[in-house]
Image (cartoon, rainbow, N blue to C red; front, side, top):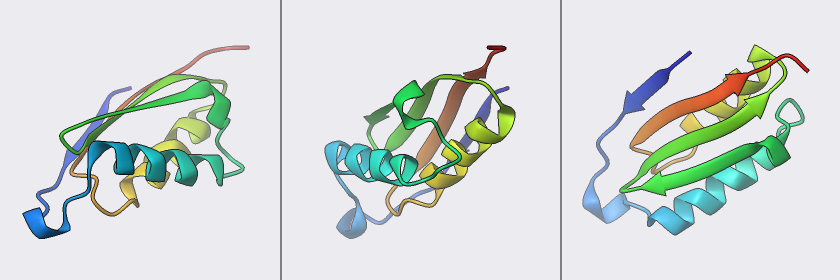
Length: 85
């Protein structure tokens, strides 16, 4: 499954890639539905890419929703794979 979204943020409200990465990691870590130790977060020019492997689709969906809710994310690519354990 491949999900992608892009949003344009005004420059005055833009966040650095490092700041976004930290905020996304915090959002994912605080969600009990997401095995945060299985998810990697990379940010380039405000576009967040999620990678890793989870056991269930709802875990990937939750990580995507958590990330999409972080202010300043202008794009989101979900490359999390759902694999059988």
